[in-house]
Image (cartoon, rainbow, N blue to C red):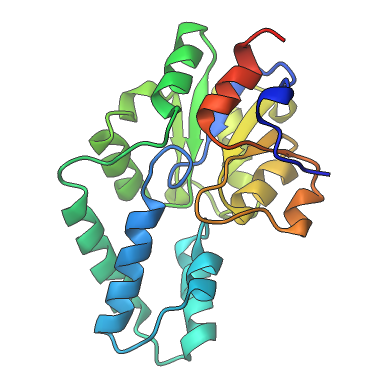
Length: 228
């Protein structure tokens, strides 16, 4: 049973760490939520919390499918997607905020010589831009985006691809995620998976996967490296 485990938990030793990007490393999901509601309103559709939450962590294709299911085939997804990207880029010009503990955890991993990667459902230009704007781009050994895989999350391919590039077996990787789709992907890849919730909290189904939930990446760092 998955519980909120913070300081009580000690992680199993790992040889590499693979991070999700939006909502895990970058504090972008709340910004994107505002944009999604604004753009839907511009286009004459009413976004809801339920529809928005179902989109979190999903691929471009999955988001398209969800919006068509919610609003019908007349929903102008291409226009919606283009407008969201333009506004997101405008609002990230001054920099992209990172989640609490992200810099500290990535820095400690680098000091210890532990390989790190990113596995994201975002397209490569988005990932490169946002990680660069946050000052994190050069800190990772590999970045796997939607453009690098055939099957996006919740399929394990993004995480398996990252592990292959890092030359570490999946069972020796720690995966850090904030979304249900991401948790499913990392768990299916056979990785030690920790959920650090952002806008979405774990459901009973996600809890049943037997992974840990922690409040922040600071808690992950303590669970990984501080003595009992």
